[in-house]
Image (tube, rainbow, N blue to C red; front, side):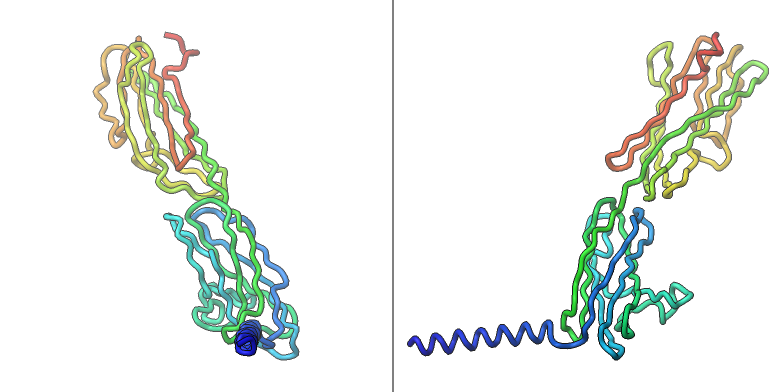
Length: 282
């Protein structure tokens, strides 16, 4: 009985050893020497640079699998063994540059390859790279890739035009992004309050997109003001101000507080104007 148990244990151990030997094998002597990835913005193309060291004397073909290389807007992660970029190719979509279902040929010594990354949500993502030959794992390593959120800011300014019986204030707004990541579908709300009565007299809402390190103008029509406030001294001018849709008309005793608030995920930014400004008096 004991002999049978020992035989069974010996056979199991042998199978385990053989399995590990086959998986890690005595194949190519290839190691991940280095990995680097600069921070990448949301919605931008990132790149993971990998140095693979082939310690053998002959070229060898290996496969790369990169886990957590892509994350969509729902937070779902995708792995890839494709989009392997060779530093020697000139065109991004050259067949020799982008490997879809082909191994990577490593010459003896250090070899540099790069893998495309992409994320639709900010955060920190651990990217794991596996190098294999004929389904045998040769080496693996992990690196944390930073995807910072947008850094949003709102700016409002105005231009005054004096007409025969009215003062007209054209309001221009800008959604500014000082961050690396793009922000899509930024909900932006305009609220106009009459300071004399304390009542809200106008509201509107719209979404905007802004790229990383860029700004987007708030408008409903290019090169026109975002909103217009008319202060009529002898009755409204009757101007339609089209195609501007955000229009408020008041009298000489009115002063309006213009508030614009933008929201993207957990970021909320706002800016205000008081028109006519207090320094103009009545």
